[in-house]
Each structure stands twice: as structure tokens, then as C-alpha cells.
Length: 271
Image 1: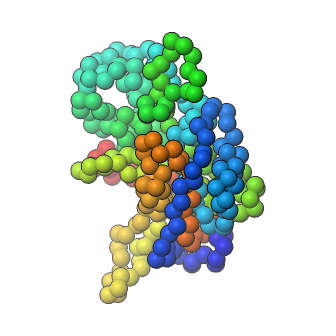
Image 2: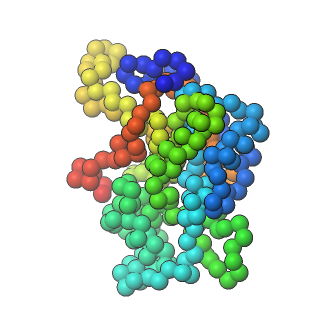
Image 3: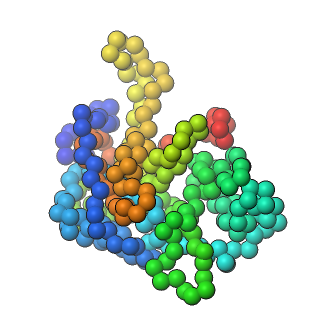
């Protein structure tokens, strides 16, 4: 339960949200205790978690803690990766890694592969990131380095939610986010990669609009909406703000995972 009695519909949003990026989160190393680092960062920032808060983490720090680093020098490209790399003008070692992280290719063009990720969503280059992706002290002669996405971001979010709840005696939601592009739109926005506690989708079908018309198709991607606003505050360059707190939603705690946001492949016109 949130601090206030949750709405019977499962979720409501008032006229304002508080979105705060927490400064001072250190550079994460493999094996770091993220829950402890989050707790220490909140204490240093004099922020107290409350029931119903959504703790939002950039996927990169989860990947770093879970040692999702890959040294491309250690990747041996297959014949398919060599052929595809030449076709799209990409390092065949990176192409090999993209193929390993994917279940199919949706689109391909010079410099980019649009794939269906193993987690079910469509993304450029399987979400593999070369920005700020090297270990703190990379061994001499290694690299270039990249980071793959967490292996099971929903499970990571659940573990962090449990640890933070025990540490602060609160019921919070936890989200792990990344950024992606969209068909026919420029720029990237944040999206929910892993979810624990927050309803991913707010189904408004059966509700009425201001004129009494029954809504037939309205489903709001709550988790992606929260991810987008948190991503805007956190930044995507050198801001160093991978931890964000979103406050002001009222919701019943949900057991749904990020899979609730996925459209079936047979219904996806852009797959």
C-alpha cells in the first residue's frame, strides 16, 4: 500500500509530481551493493524515502554492479557477424554481441541494427552501450569495452525493492530504465526495462471521458511515462545522476513485470 489509501482503479495521478535526481552516486564497480549505495546516497542528500515513492535507476549502474562488461577483443565474430558487419559498416565483434543479445533483426541500415532484444522489446544495437562503459581500472591492453543490459532487470528491481523496504521500512516501487528511439520520431526517451511494485500499465478501458463517451482502447504506459520523466532529470551525458526519486503517484502495489508492456510480436507492425 502507499501512504494514502490507493484508488480502487489501482492508480491515480494528481496535478503534480516531484521528480528529484540524487547527486553524489559514486561510479559503480562490479560486485557493489547497489541497495547500500542507494541508501548512503539518499542519506547524504538528506532524502527520506516514503511509501509510494518510485526509485528509478539507470540501467548502466545495474549493469556495472552485475559485471556486464564485455571486452570486444575477447569476442570472436561468426561468419554471419562478419557478413552483417560489412553490410552495415559496424565492427563485426560488436555485431556478434548484438546477435547474441537478440532473437531477431527487425531493420538494418548503415551504422545501426534494429533488433528484437532477448527481453522482448525492439531496440537499436540490442541496447549495448559504449558510453562510459569501461571498468574503472581496465587491464592494460584490453578494450574497447561495452556494457550489455542486465540479464534479468525485473529480478534486479525486485531484489532492490526488497532490500530498500527492509532498510527504510517503506513500501516503494523500483524501476530500472534505459533509453531508446521510436519510429518516425527524433531523439531518445527513457523506458522501463525492469519493474518491481509499480503497475506497468494503467488500463482505462471502460472509463468515460468528460463527455461520457466510454473509452475503448486507452491504456496508459505508466512505467514508461515515469521512466521518461526520470530520464530527463537524470540526463544521458556527463551529468552523473543515475538515481532518481519520483513522488506523487498513488497506486496499489503490483506484481506485474516489464513483460506487461510488451506487444505480442504478431501484433507488432514494426517488428
